[in-house]
Image (cartoon, one colour):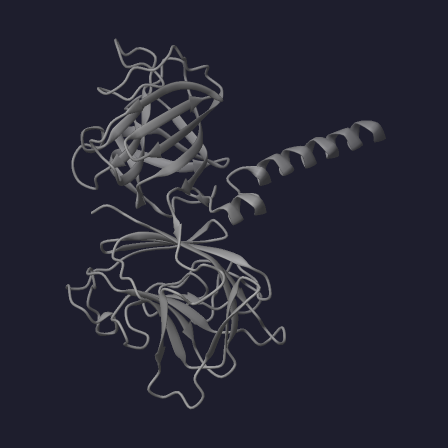
Length: 392
């Protein structure tokens, strides 16, 4: 009897560990810039389109009732690698939309990666109405897709085998979508993306390409320096801003907030689309690894990854005195933020267009990106600052 109980306990532990590995990133993946599109618990970061009834079951996005429809990612991407797993019945009919527009039919405005063996021409692995894949099939169990999009080049692997490689320039940027056709159950999990084509805007040696902007109330301006490949700042207030301007982009940056004590949390931020030589203008993506009552879902002062003044991070993921990776996708009015690859913010600016974000105006025109030195206690390090512009 004791042996049976031990075996049963081991089996429960194995299943618990397996569930924990679903819909997660390794530290190596997070440092490499991968981000989760699905957290395994909610539909945060997705918008349902059509009449499908999506829900989360056992760590998977599931649709098996309602009218046909799809889930649309709130964030858009241009060049990227997408990895995901799906499970469909052998007679199932689904697909994954790539680079689709927010409005219109997603397979028309972008591409539909087929999950359907019964189509006369464009079977599983194909891009519907664009390119035919090598023979592939739905097995009824969990299967994996890996899709790489670089410019007009599209490469598809199904269960690790290359089934399609083609070129098409119809759409170069857009949303990712998960399709449900009425009456055909479909499940998705382990959805993650690695943005491609990001170029460094900090050379690790100098402050070339950046300029300091003084804060009007600064008694002791910040000190910006480069130390062992790190962009280091102490004191403040003030900011360091890019000489170049950006409107729509994917930004990834590694950050360390150097805290002198467990209850002393450095306060900083990254400003987006700011006015040149104007302190703390534009949208602010907060840096503050502090939360209330031991609950990381209660961020203090919007929390790391929150959009200051507008949307708090739904969870504080990062820790002080440790490097973490922040990913920001800005596209028109929408901003998505990940910390260590975990989705913390998805916000659409509802305000009328203008140039002053603090006065509740939606700034859609290009602006500088700046790193904030908040106050005399500021002490932070930045590295691996890289960016890719998104096509409009």
